[in-house]
Image (cartoon, rainbow, N blue to C red; front, side, top):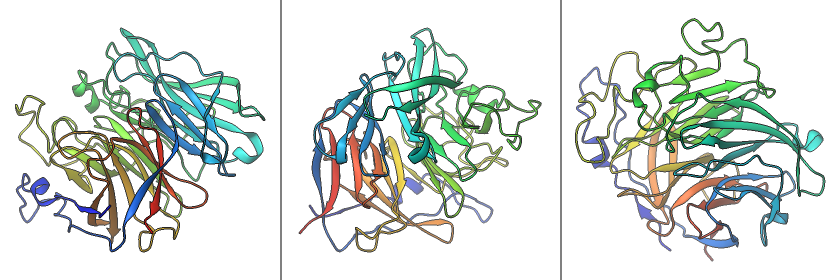
Length: 378
């Protein structure tokens, strides 16, 4: 396939840029001088999160079926027993997962899922040991549960470890509780930071519980569906869904307010206005955003030389929306987005993207198309 250019200028036409504006400038369109293809490697039903073991084996979640394991990252997946039952109505189910930084010695994994019932549920994270034969989770322990909601939408559900061993957990605001995203005393629409045992780090921005819930690290988010921690720089990046338009790519700062729903580059699904504001003092601006939407889900940064010239670039999966079903390559320069490029436009809705130990990118499709490896075309 030939790589397809991203339509970007229209995304930024919504923002009126004054001399004092902090809105992101338009990013140049890009086109690579080589082709890439998708190679099917695993059959899967509604895969959600990908996690590669150090030896190249693949652990992944399916929205309704829990965890699966694939030896060598390719071939037939086998179930991993032991995950607690999930609430699978609406957008509920099994979500992201991550390996413990010391997995090679302790075999611990962390997995997020929707716990409860349609009228009383919340994003929950468990820690467990993966058995030596990869078939069972042992000593399953709940280490976090978000505040309860009575809605089956916007759960977040991505997990990432920081260099200091703390765990980040992304949450959604439950759709109908959008206003709560502005209250750091509530976990709706927040980014959580905890220790690996569920306790609260002493240096969290609201650790004393006075100005916010101790576990909250940032707030004002709509529905964080992509999360990536860059170890060399110690920087946390995220992607989150806007409403109709206004999907965002952000750098996370402790205690920061990301604006939803006070500021947004999107509108309601029926076209009505949520707010006239796209900027406000004390609220963060995205590095880049999408109008129309791509429904971003899954985020990683390439650290290998497998793809010529792409090392260091970010890759964002797009699930749907007018500009969705795409893998977006993002190049950063001097702390800003320098270029964007759309790959595999309109081929598959992409739920997650991850890099394997051998340096290849893998994508999980949102529906029943399965898991694919990204290969350089010969």
